[in-house]
Length: 367
Length: 78
Image 1 (cartoon, each protein chain N blue to C red):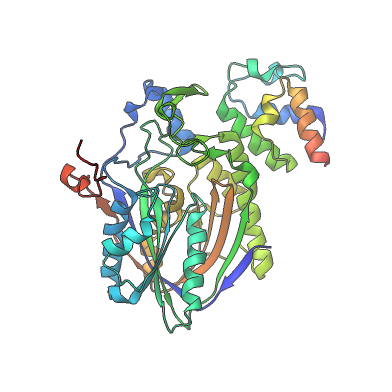
Image 2 (cartoon, rainbow over the protein chains, first blue to last red):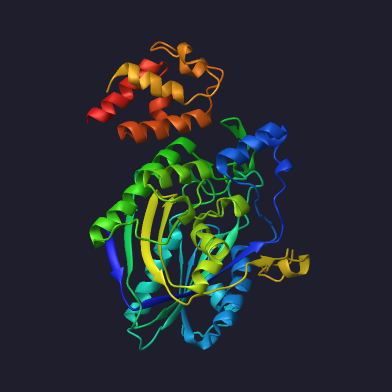
């Protein structure tokens, strides 16, 4: 029974960074025929997609975090924790959260850790960040940044279903805050439903890793994300509604009593089915998939930041958010917002060659 | 669960296929309109109508509508 309730934590604000550059769908062989592109857009709901292979996830995170910190008028010294949720870290090691502590100019009195999760990751990260701040009891570690997103997918053939974005959620200790209520679940038997086969320790990286191979009629590589679409679809439409219902039953509320229901933006068909099963009114279920595609762990906060800015900054609201996907992993959270700050969307320029070259180079011995 | 009702619901997932073409012995893989999108609609239908989660392996291992019915029925009866 993976339910938790965290008290005295207030969500103070949201921001999001996306590449300024749009993905050109015509670069994909499978969309040579316009009708195929239209079918893709109709079934997935993806109309536009931002991708820029010069940008690492931290390159999207830094400007988004700087903007939110400025909009909140927070002193950087007051931020003592970074939880970074990603499956596309800047390096295999060190953890990107450590790099972010430095890039953001935060104090060295800083708790920093990466969490490797995808579509459920923001909900998990929120519980981790909120638990940390709660454990400081207001005496220390009063403020934390939850940074969640993915970028720079290594293979150019990564499905146009996936977009890139990085989001920042600011949390702080507040005696008067209403509780955050969570439900979590995991089913590792579905580990192969969404998987990048090579690049980790099981298969490593070999010359074959970058070979183009055909899988289900599509060009791909072993470094790319493989997805068993049907199993993921079946998982999403059955698990997400159950988790939402369980959360309400456990904490004794009617899940319908929320102002907005923000789901991971998996694909439109799947999300519509979930909303239908839960009998949710359309005007309470915002979408960002049309503009940014499936942005993995960024999709829930990106939807909040881009679709609910006016609604949430003008009056208090009660939100129910559910993330589900790779793992397989899922999490649902209910929380209230009051007087939160939502920064304008940060559009990040491509890095220049010089900017890309500033990072570590292996000091190879002269021959 | 009843076969004729299942066939009716199965046929509803298609837009351009005449329902009369869908019989218990129809090999659904050979229907011109069969696609991964129709497969997803079937997953939705089985979830909604029978509270059964069908997986890709369940579909891959069968050929006819009747075979698929048997798979869904076995899961629904569990």
